[in-house]
Length: 461
Ligand SMILES: NC(=O)C1=CN([C@@H]2O[C@H](COP(=O)(O)OP(=O)(O)OC[C@H]3O[C@@H](n4cnc5c(N)ncnc54)[C@H](OP(=O)(O)O)[C@@H]3O)[C@@H](O)[C@H]2O)[C@@H](O)CC1
Ligand SMILES: Nc1ncnc2c1ncn2[C@@H]1O[C@H](COP(=O)(O)OP(=O)(O)O)[C@@H](O)[C@H]1O
Ligand SMILES: [K+]
Image 1: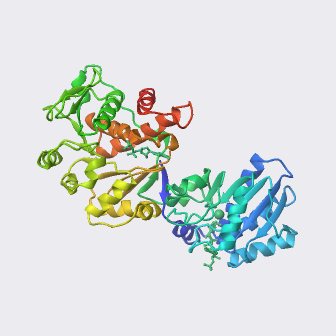
Image 2: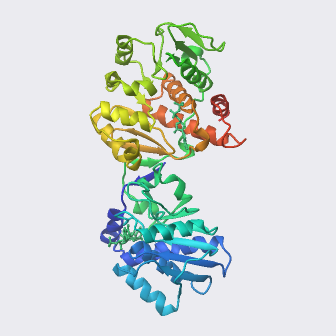
């Protein structure tokens, strides 16, 4: 796991106050980090266009121009006059050296976006939009300094943003880089150390970016075991039975010893999945919500109130009886539309999907503050998993998963680990990683995956 921070100003401040570093030293390291990347990856004399704004993000860019000067063919484009003290100082230094300025942007080998960083505090004006759109048209290798310009400090992109191939972010990873809206703009992300090693710069946090190594697969250590050792999952299937059946198959392939589909009607199930009309006695986890038309409210209420760990999905996010489960061991897996409904049912917020997506972390935190026992897994291009004040982000998913049924597979994977005695939080984290890493292993193309392919890939992890 890597640490995430909502803001890094306080971390910069700590460097000044506790380590006697200065703004100049931090900025020199920021610029030097970018310079080193360019030197390590591009031959001498390549053309580098550095596009700078008026604040310290621009100042980083101007300092970079100085460091690259003479080894590379550097052009500085000032979108606005240097305004911050550091920008003025860096400009004076660059000028003294003779760094070339240009009045027009062009398709250089490398473009560095130093327009706006953490200080983007209002809507982009027309000239900035036009500039960013022009830069985006170029085939150059594009580097964003700190943050792709146009992504704001909640991770929202309201008009446009710079499409980076690489974001060189300063000091530490910022939480808001990992919203769905920012995902297309980031490119690869590397952290640049600012005068001290990253682990010194960073402080304690409750927010983390998941890494592949954080997955815990349900490997079996016990030799003396039987199918019951690995749990009995009950998946409730209602009117849209397919959803429950996909989840059941995914769960079986991910290690659960016994999987039953609970349905009042007779189903045609694969031979290894059992059918039951009511909850089984030895049930160790429940998956409920997917396509759940036919169940009586009283029956569902009773299930939600029992103490068996459960994962709740889909239809139940439109029904306030879901709240019955919030003091129990539960994982909720809404997609954004379902989460908007959940927020409303829970009297937390009455917002649109766009409003949610513009500030995903804020609403997740609001929900978890009110229901600290619940594990919430908010689906999306970047999945957020949260419990109480802890937040984990899974960035490994891709558009290959944008298909009906992908969510049902995820529900099955979470359920499988719950049935095998994982805590709700561990189940959500490892299931989400398995889901996205399996999708990434599907190599045919990025459009043809179907749920059974995904289950196959999960089985090969
Ligand atoms: N602190 C440190 O030690 C270190 C800081 N570092 C670097 O500093 C960056 C933060 O710098 P920052 O705070 O100066 O903000 P920045 O992103 O340059 O933007 C502010 C400028 O943009 C302007 N502006 C804003 N929105 C606008 C809009 N829509 N349209 C037009 N203009 C707009 C705003 O104008 P104003 O609000 O004043 O009118 C102001 O002039 C950070 O991302 C990192 O790269 C690193 O070197 C490491 C050490
Ligand atoms: N562009 C994407 N990038 C990453 N993950 C995605 C993307 N599109 C969809 N997903 C993932 O696919 C799953 C879709 O779930 P959902 O919308 O509930 O589907 P369904 O209910 O049809 O099974 C979620 O886990 C979501 O995070
Ligand atoms: K930038």
